[in-house]
Amino acid sequence: MSSLSAAFRLARAGWILTREGVVAALPGEELSGPPKFGWRMAKLLTRRRAKKRQRSERLAGAVARLGPSYVKLGQFLATRPDVVGNDIALDLALLQDRMHTFPREQAVHAIEGSLGRPVGELFRELGEPVAAASIAQVHAAEVEREGVVSKVAVKVIRPGVRKAFAHDLESFFLAARLHERYIPSSRRLRPVDVTETLAQTTKIEMDLRLEAAALSEIGENTQGDPGFRVPHVDWERTGRDVLTMEWVDGIKMSDVEGLRAAGHDLPLIAANLIQSFLRHTLRDGFFHADMHPGNLFVEANGTIVAVDLGIAGRLGKKERHFLAEILYGFITRDYLRVAEVHFEAGYVPRKHNVAAFAQAIRAIGEPIHGQPAETISMAKLLTLLFEVTELFDMAARPELVLLQKTMVVVEGVARTLDPAFNMWKTAEPVVGNWIASNLGPRGMLTDARDGVKALLSLARQAPDFAARTERLSREIDKMAEHGLRFDDETAKAIGKAEARHTRSGRVALWVIALTLVWIAWKLL
Image (cartoon, rainbow, N blue to C red; front, side, top):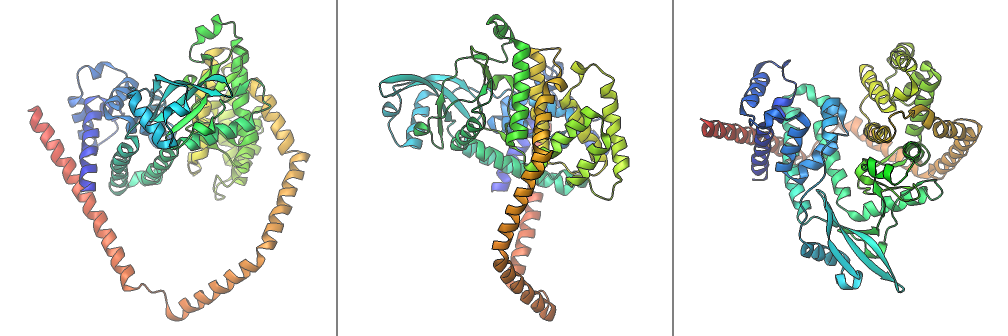
């Protein structure tokens, strides 16, 4: 029954996407056979008013009808241009996470259930909601500590959102499995793995304690940084379903005219934003991955305050070396070094030729050096770089794709503030300083120290490794003598799983087919 209801929900979603013109707006001229017929039918079934809209507007209309889970799906796929393509990813990135508010009484119930205390004890006053998104909404409130009253923002999980997302997730997994089974060319994109990543990401986002922890971590990382901070977390009033943090008094970065009227230096704010993002990425390996202008405030003294840390990105030491050397290689036009870094990091298989790869990198870098610096987009450069690396079998890496998506957004915000923004001049001090600290003599000493620590750790584990090796050797000897065998229970379990998988796929296809027949009959 679970597969049946998932199939019905999937058919409903397909119908809404068709009626809102989303399917018709996809490129379909190059298709052939049944897919081409389906695309043409979608064009006929599109609402008349939807035909007058741009693709991004059609997407927004469809998502508004489908609900919060599809908002999150769209925003997640915006971070995966390798899956949906660059053009569609840009359209999805424009989806606004704005939903209707839910009653204050439901928020009170969620807060008291999460924190185990009456709202009257927790807050001096809890106001009506001031903003609402797909997963949570925000209330203005006041707390009293030692006789001092301060204003706070209280973020509360939307009632029933976890259950709704769990149901829709069944449909997403069904679509991914059907995709992999019946469209072999899509298997390299691993639709099921992509859906699992979405599920994990959203589970994290729905636990507000984890967002509070991310705010706390970035707060510690940026304590001494000039002109950037995040709100302080009130841990006493924070739980799984509620996050309380300081209220931010500032102007949203989306209000460019308001910033200008307040007398802020917009080019300075743009430079500070980019340098802060690069500093978090290279120095800390932990960055805010949803830095659209609605999540960025500017205080009276020019300090940038970033909120809504439900989505964050992490880069390991290897990825940070990779990013810094690539950016510096393009700045110095050392294309061979950029190519070598890809091979050293293991991103491009060794079967390819380094010189040939460097030639492809040069095709990206040389046109850039012929342009004025203020017109060069680092985000576009990384996009072109990832397109070229696909030709050399570089697999998509989620952490780098998320970094690329965030850089596109941050650079776009900076250029909105300062149309003549020079990305390379602004980035050079941060990138150059990080390279000097991590790839020069100091970096070599740090790597040597880390290597010694790893050797000591390995030496401590040597007795355990020896015992495991002995056990493995005995098991291999047994397999060599008696062969590899399945017991009856294992064989039966494999048979049942395969039968269930095949049956659910057939049921889903029949449900979708019957739904389409019913829709066509209704239209006649």
